[in-house]
Length: 437
Image 1 (cartoon, rainbow, N blue to C red):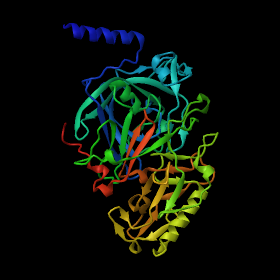
Image 2: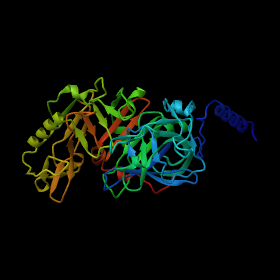
Image 3: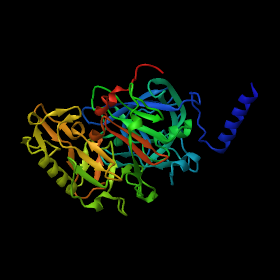
Image 4: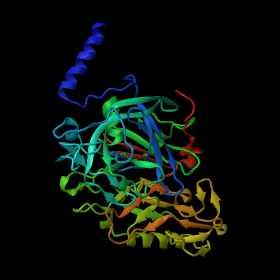
């Protein structure tokens, strides 16, 4: 054994004695980026990926939860693994997870997902708006595919990936065969931060959701993502991420910031014309309510009622030549598709701008992301009336994110976004998942 190899082994042994968070992997230290293929489920409109987990490896389908604080899986129904380990109270991992809840197993004998002296967090199913306060934290093997930015590479095993066990009932409302959700939120045990910690690359990830149920979009962790023959990331518009100081989507008593992603929308324009909005709704108040959240937990964007009313009225006024037709739930504003033209970026309808830190910085929503084809002859404005009492005044939902590249830089707390990739003559379905790097 060389002196260098001996020193490396000794160094990792010292780290292991200090912290059980020294995690090995089968890749080389040069692995700096990973990918997850993402498909859209036609029934639930959820975004689905697949990972390998456990020993021996089992392919697990998971729903993407953009603001989720953890990767959680159903451990009650057939979880078998020789490398599973519960995380015990006082461990470094529990400290990293900011967990202050410890408990013993309530059953007569410990089992996977229910162990004595274990620490717990609160997994969430955003699709049925349900939290579970008894989610035990654990470690097990996780397998994810590497990439050079343009092409897929080898699958990499992570021996000690932190995840949460949940009961079977929490999978209610998830797509068929899905066993949990993969959280991409802002906290330390969400997938982006764990990968960055383990492989020593920047805390960055990109989301590119396909608008087609027949082809895959991609989530990219690390630097250098490219769609075929084009580096869209160089043209992104940058805006700060806003911290909601209240743990919406987690246990309020933990008194920690929300893991969800908020941006600072200051106003809205329809066809370039400002609409009148109660500006108080656009900021996050002392209770954590208000503001603009980006979420894959909602298939379509949701607007607080007063915002919805003024936006839809302005949209209808600007599209006065189109023929109105009966509403189709959950949409209220629908048109005959025969009376609306088409463009490279979808139906020829008024643009909707979410104006950010200045009037020159805005997220422009074109027809491809604003109009939903509900039948052969009917298209509807794909925004939903969210009611009066909402946690977030504006929720930018999955449909409005499709074929837009979103780049989250957690270290700098910024979001980069492209608006519609159709202007670049590409889509999120164009990442190469077949040629190996």
